[in-house]
Structures are given as C-alpha cells and as structure tokens.
Image 1 (cartoon, rainbow, N blue to C red):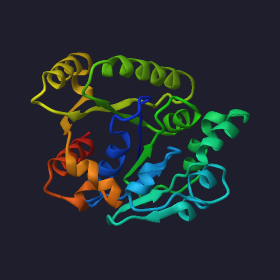
Image 2: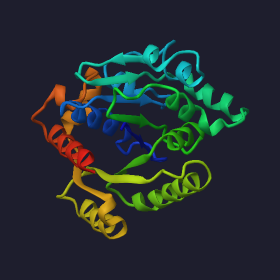
Image 3: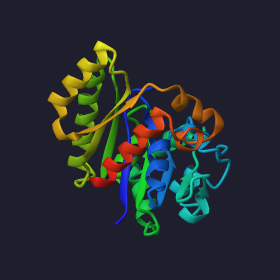
Length: 252
C-alpha cells in the first residue's frame, strides 16, 4: 500500500523542502520507490532535485486532469526517486481553485484516479501557508510530517497547524493523522535548541521523531547543485541525519 505523506508547515524557512528532498532520497536508497510532488509555487523541490520548473507536464496539468501521473513524472539522479515538477504559475492555480466547487479535492481526485501501486511513498511538498494548495495536500494525504525549527515560537505555530489538521480531518479527510514531527536546524550546543527539544518532547511525546536535523553547511549547499545531500556529501552530518530519519519513517 502506498503511503501518502504531506510535509507541511505554514511557517517558511523551517526546512520543509529540505526534508522532502532528502527524506525522499534517503528512503529511495533503501530500495523503495518514492514520488515527490512539488506543490509549492517556489518550486524549490524541483530545482533541488536537479530539474527546471515545469512549463507543461507538471503538477498544474496533473491536478487539472490534462495529463496523467505517468506523463507528469520525471526521474531524478537517485534511483527509485521520481518527481512531479512544480512551477511558479501554481500561485495562479490556487486563485483558480478558489472559484471551483469541491476545490479542496483536486489533488486527491487526481491521485485516486492514478496508479500509485509502483510507489511505496508519495511525499508532497506544501507551500509555506495554509492556503488551498496546502489544504489539497492534506486532503489527499493519509499522514503529515511537520518540520519544526528549533527556535522560540516554534511550538506556538505548530499548535495552530495541528488545529488546521483537526479541522481538515473533521470535514474532508477522516483518515488524516500527524505522522510525525521532526526538529530541524538543531544545535545541541545552544541552550535554545535544548529548551525547544525539551518542550517538544513534553508536548508531542512519541509523535516527535528521535532524529534531529542539524544545522549543516553541506545540507545548505546541496540544493544549489541540484542534488540531495546524500549525493553531494554522503558522509556529512546532514546526510546521516536524513538517513536516520528515513529509517524512522519506514519503521512507522
């Protein structure tokens, strides 16, 4: 059975796209088939996996039903990792969706009418907002991974997102659940990171992944080369942390 996971946080700069790219690549090297869907108009997951944004045959045309999943999918450098490319004009797609009936279900309908049997995991990179694109991702997913930056106010924003997930579960997707929360940009030398970790442990319990994603230069550099960190520097702390997170995700 294919596991569909949305990676979401309404706050920007928390490592959401970094998590999609590197978690997807790290799961794929464990002999799993992974599909990344770039639903963010910034299309950073697309460029971070070595592709240009889609003029055609990307996520917009897939959601609209103009092209099939197979037509919309491209391969990446990582064997077993495929991508449905994003594009900046997705921002216009969100405006178009606002006037449609059943506008929350466009992605869910597109995926449910597609053959996903070749994939073990589908990871959806959401925009840094709680707009219609993110709602579409949460309606289509069966679980949500929430990257949370190790900083003040992080858990305050997380509680707001949790409330949104509860509402979506109540109205549109009864099977939706929080699959896990991962602390990003973590530095155990900093008192702030340790305090956020302690608070997150108390607030989230087993929902919090054991793996911490560190601040890491290699992790920051890899997207500019269009590569997951595991291809850019497999022995870096960033690469090792995402391999650890991948093992946790697969174990759940």
